[in-house]
Length: 408
Image (cartoon, rainbow, N blue to C red; front, side, top):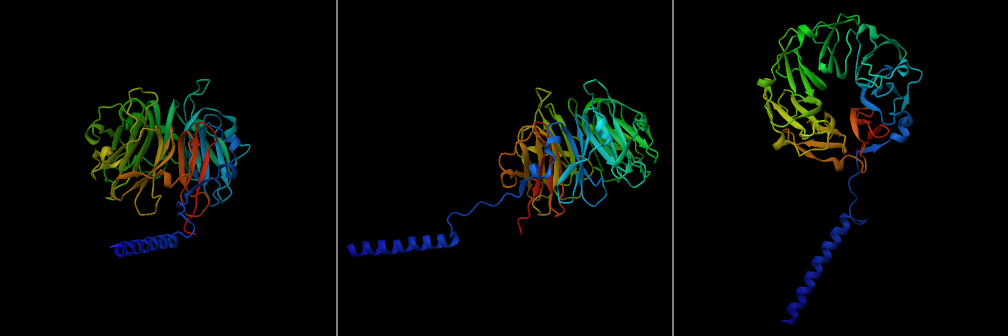
């Protein structure tokens, strides 16, 4: 009996030793190191942070210099700014620009070639500044990153929160949609950057507090529709009748909700891979005390009719989302969601391929990154074919996150 007991101990010891040896072989230096974080904060080395201290409202990536890399145009509470890229993701502030002369509390920027000369022009949608001036800004690119002030070509003013540049009437010229506190505006371009206010002929008469406008063909009929994200009123779907005239079809296309929805951003993308545009609302609770800050995900049935799948396909989220974007951040062929939050920095939600998302932020972003995000722009800023992130921050300098190639 004693011999059997000793034999069992010997055998057990051998098994444990074998397990320890195998574990040691798997991890020769002790416990395995955690996977490296793909994004690195390079703001201090790559941005003129002293010039970007807490007054950016919106950022847009565009090759203003037309030198093959992406620069950044910033709509700001103070003078608007252009950051020039040296090609490696290192930015410098454009000096002595005409933009420096004006301070109108810009909320959004649209960039396009409005006059057909091959250069990018600038339209800024502005809220009222401290002097209660309600003036939008329009600049024609004269070449060599020099602009002329051409506000006289814009026939409207108001408290503007959102701008979109798109050819609405299919004539080959880029028009402008303005989301206002009040009646939204549609400006039709004659091709020479002269705009005509055709709001009365083309848009429904509504006085909302609009925070964002998105354009996309939600019904698959080949014509761009307009999605309106509102702060204090219901969000809207304006369907294009095929002639650039928009009809309010919200009631038949969007599911009704009982909660107040304070929306800051609308995004359209095909999240479930079925070939149509689905919708994401970035929501907050800031000005409306009873608003539900949960973001919403709505799935398109292919004909522009939407079903709310938030509760089953999107995690609970109440961090006051000011911006969101769809990007295939993990390279698996489907679109993930990145959100910018006023309370909580940036979050990453990974798509399972069928349009259901899970929070995977901790595996993508450095710890302690908590700027109050009002906008962000995902683009390849250093030419390595990987998506980088520029953050327009409210409570401090803007932030630049460069994606590292972990396959090297």
